[in-house]
Every structure is written in structure tokens, then in C-alpha cells.
Length: 208
Image 1 (cartoon, rainbow, N blue to C red):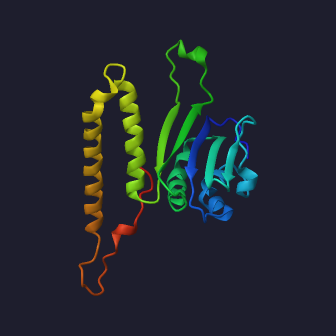
Image 2: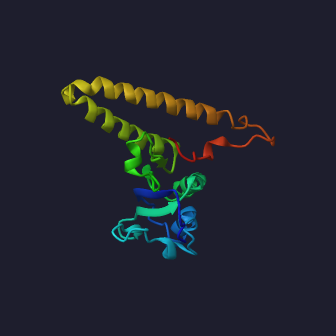
Image 3: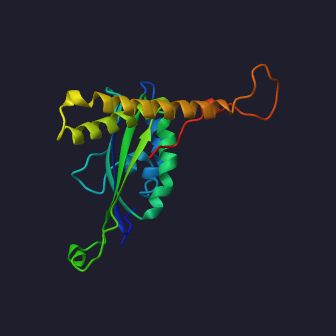
């Protein structure tokens, strides 16, 4: 469905490794927040991007990969779909992965920028994974990549081991705190009945 006068062109990009048993029907259900927003009736109908030079949404069955390079016209309400999108993908991916979502201000006129006008462009990184540990691992890897790339302008790579170790320590603390918080939701060992649920099976929607 074409949204005339939509304030944004929204681009979703990512390459996600899937579990081998994942079927097309599973992918279609997980990506329903995308293709339904575009006004399609199915993933096959909504997999094409708004731009012909973008591959859209593709499932590589042999490599068990989901490739997304897909643009749709929309508004801020697109953000409401992101939690459901990440929760659905958490169930399908084999390891941690990243989705990049870019909001390009379609109404911004560069000539107006000279008069002090500002663009409403925005950028989000969404993390998905089969477990909290998998999500934190990909967050850690991306952060180290960014930090090393920045600091190698001033230091040799061999001098950055301490920085990497500190980043690892911070993520270890975050993971331990998450595990401890989930442990609080467990019923006492040997207990019978009760209203407490098992929190350990819950998966995060996404971490910014």
C-alpha cells in the first residue's frame, strides 16, 4: 500500500542466520509487522522494496539466511511494530544478529536547511537472538569493533587489550545482573504450587 505524503522513507537492513528447521511460514509470521504495514496480504506479496534496486526480503534456504534490504513509506507509527518484529525473530535466529532501521525525512528540503530547518532523520539498531547471552554477544562485538576503529587512529592495536578487557567486564556484569534478576522470578526449589512463574525462559524484545 502506497502512503501518499508519508513523512518518512523507512529502510530496514540486516542479514540474520536462521535455525535449519525454520520454514517459510515461520518467517512470514515473524515478518508480519513489516509486510502488513506495507499493506500486503502475505510475505510474498510484500517482500519487494519500494526501490527496484534493493533486493527486498529474501530467504536463502541453502545458507539458512534471511536477508533484508527493504524500504517502505510510513510514519512514526512504524516504531510500534518493532517489538513484535524482534520477538518473532528471536524464535527463528540461530545466533545474535542486528537489524538497522533508518527513518529518512521525505519532507526535508535541503534548501530550508540554510534557514535553520533541521531534518527528522533517525537511526535505530535492533538486536535479536535466541538467548539474552547471544544478544549481548553481538552487542559486545559491535561495540569493540567501533571502539577499536576509533582508537586505532591514536594507538597500536596491541595497546588496546586493556580496553577490550574492560568492555568484556562490563558486559559480564550486565549479563550477571540479568541472570540474577531472572532468578528472582523462579519459584523456590522443592516448592509446590504457588503463583510465581519461571522467568528464565523469557526473551528480551530488543536492546538499544
